[in-house]
Image 1 (cartoon, one colour):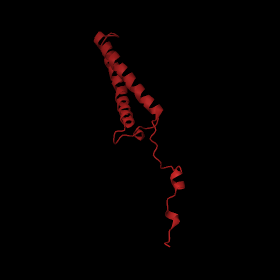
Image 2 (spheres, one colour):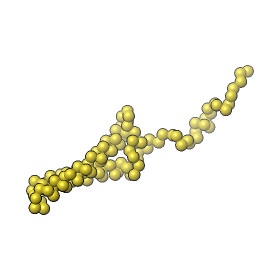
Image 3 (tube, helix red, strand yellow):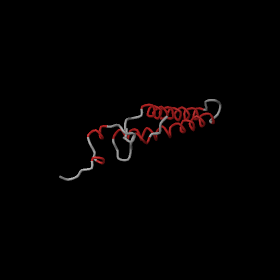
Image 4 (cartoon, one colour):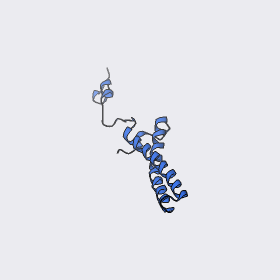
Length: 103
């Protein structure tokens, strides 16, 4: 009979154990909700700011331009992380839910 070193063998018990190095690819609900809300409020800010600038709400165009810039500032990270979440959900190569930072 051949000698088998059982210290380095893999058993079913080893596979079933939860280790800290397991990959958890569950969708982070709070982070995705934050990304979608940034996206929505950013789009609303851009649209309302453009409306305010074109109709000179507040006396001049500066209020509308500022509101549009603020909407753009919210839109950019919202679009970026919503896109990552969508691609990770669809299973595109190179995208996973671990690319979204925790809140």
